[in-house]
Image (spheres, rainbow, N blue to C red):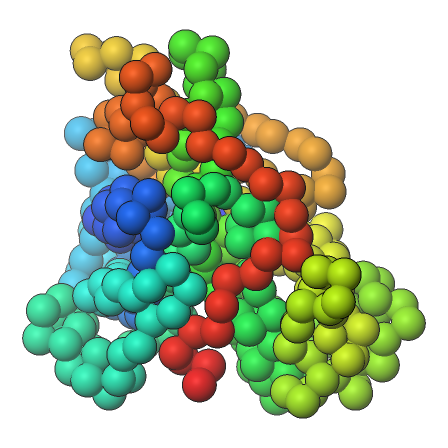
Length: 328
């Protein structure tokens, strides 16, 4: 299967996990961050389908998820299914915080996940978190990963060659294609650090005057300069770095809301976006079967009488999310 790496990473989420992402973000107007660990649990059969890979579904449209690899293999062989068996992503228990801060004890959280979600702490892979509204507004800078989100991960991949995948969920205001009115959808940005060579080259392309090997914890974090802009001593533009990875297929965006066209014939769709610098949008049938339509958030933010229907969007990349507890 020849797909961009970020698409393969997103396609590993189960329907239940995407429903949870939506549910955690549906209270985004309350301006509180949320996060969960991502666990590589259970097995699915990844199949090719158009522009996006997808976990195999039966005739009723339900994903087929298996507890063991052998069960998946037997089902695949019995039904002559073309695809690759792989572990799928499940979410742990959610933790909520403030506008830009969450404090949780990692060890305690793993124990909580094991007890409440029946996941194995040894299978923990990544972290996903949500950036909510700030001051009742959408800041475009908070739709990206902040320097505090990715500096340590960049250094880890640069220095050890370890792969890192990160996910952020954020609100995005757009025009409803059914009504022509403004509505807010939850989007997921996927960012993959595949290996040392790739992240170093992307950094050089995005920041040609920066000494890539000289970036450190001491000089890489953004701070507000006197003019209000975000700057760091290393001279890194972290937004441009993410876009450079996107051009290589290691960053992309998925709209996880779905498209509401009426109670009887609601269709599940996802919008896929490559690197935003390409300015391309493709609408495809949901790879996740994200029959994520008619949520409370969708209704509140798209309804003409909703207090959230006209939320102000601030095109400001000088607004970062704050430091997160898992980087402290």
